[in-house]
Image (tube, rainbow, N blue to C red; front, top):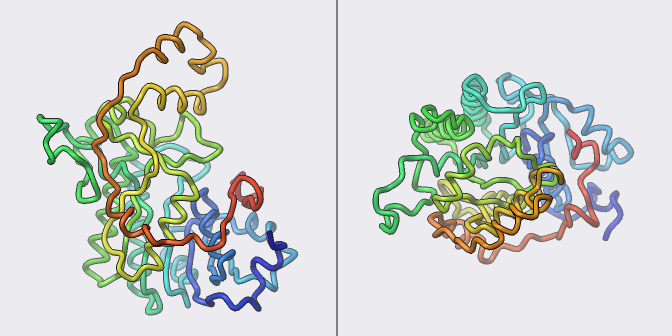
Length: 333
């Protein structure tokens, strides 16, 4: 493993293209920042609290291909400042620390943010591509098909969640992601912005908890065969792939695991719940569940992304949780 200074040394012969990552302080954003710097890109890191990021890299500041911007997706001018000179934007919306859950108000804020970001991209001449992070919840929520075996019942990126259905059952994560992504696509098509979206499953990060807003409606997702998860490294790979591949277009459903058996549920519950609440801490419950061999039919496909990534090489291999972890300040953000 190369020493840290070598990973981001500005004398490297790697590509000097400049990209922007917003929000660079979130779980995905910080991982993308780490990977892009590692592989030689110059990065404009846009986030709410830049002091935390600066503290991570102070000793190497002059050698980094890193510029840090205080940017708020609800502040159009701060977005414009961060985008100057960039050829691409990786955008993901992160919930503010003082409002860590989704509701109708947060949905409105996410939609406004998506509009501001795409408008800023349309006004920035150097921007060639936007990689917009959405969610599988913008795809899966709709009334069930009457015939579960029909081809029409299978779900992929051509589907959109029904916003009225989401609001009716207070599935605010799905409603917010759907309207925000539709807003972004409408503006991108109207203003001629080259945009692709990544619709990720439940992100399996170390700090995942039962309170994650994606999990609302998990039982229904499980029974419908559309409960999908994605590892952080795979999600980052997908973003880099659709950015670097000029043939990428439209939406990409992104996941590398499906939860459709009792064994899968037990494994996830053990990870999500404290030990005292875990099924394994209640022998009778655990024994009963382990004896249930039920497997629900998978009704969701990521074939489009799989075909695009078939020849994709991750480049520098970053072991996220071992050899080359993200800076601790970013992990705790």
